[in-house]
Amino acid sequence: MTVLLLVLALALIGATTALLARAAGQRRREAVAVVAEIGRYGFSSRHPHDGGRGSTAARTSLLPRFDLLAEQLGGIVSRRAGPEAAAEVAGLLRSAGIYRTSARKVLGYRVLLTLGLPVLWLVAAQGQSPLSVAIGLVFTVALGWAGPIAYLRRRARTRLDAIDNQVPDMIDLLVITIEAGVGFTASLQIAAERFAAPLGDELRVVVAEHEMGLTIEEALEHLLERVDTPALRAFIRAVVQGQRLGVSIGRIMRDVADEMRKRRRQKAEERAHKAPTKMMFPLVLLIFPALFVVLLGPAIVSIVKTLHGS
Image (cartoon, rainbow, N blue to C red; front, top):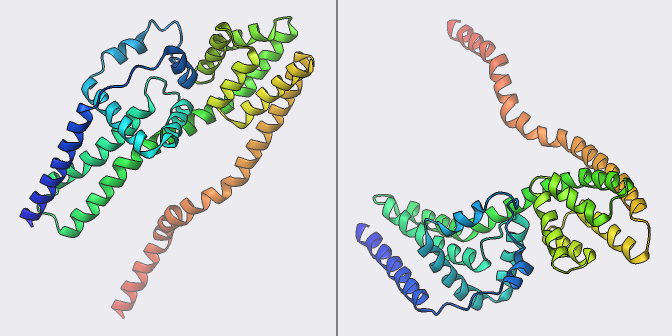
């Protein structure tokens, strides 16, 4: 058994070494232009007054060699798997608000984890049964390949929900500022300064793109491409259609604010209706058994003692 594990470990280590050597020999592609990076990811999600802590953290990364290796491996995977794989990962990165990590780096780390975790498991599983070793290998391979994508999807879902909850408050602020005589673009700038992450970060991207020469409609459409939530979709579509048709922006904001309030009320009612169904499983599996033990336990003990005594 030990010989078999040693052979498997050596085979995996040899495959990993060969792949790393091939990746290290690949010539690094030319750096993507700044405008292209802005088009794909926007810019740093940190507030502009944070003193550049994000860039400092990026420069002082503890694992620069692993980052470079992951970038090269990701390039190989993206060429083999096609552009769809990299595009899907890039969309998840945008939704999750991770602007300083490329899709190729994520794909490269997936390969590293898929190869590295099984090797670590083989080293740690010395003396285990063959069935346990085989199950552990399957689990570690699946975890290494699917784990990063599952993490990105969970983080993206959490961030999109947070943005969706902030949109009604943003619209109320826009209504107040527009009715006070402030223009729509200036109102967006005020909202970008007042709101914290994650919605404030995306609004700052919109303002920056508008200052770079894009129209406010184009900047909002780019925002919808990055962050596609129901509330934000309704807001942006109403604004874009109103701008194209020449409708008063104040009237549009009031109508959208009313719709957002109705949407929030419907969402709260939907959650209230789902609450009994969600509470059923904890009640049946956790609360009821403990309750039965407390209520029926003494009675069962008394009955058993009576039967043994008789």
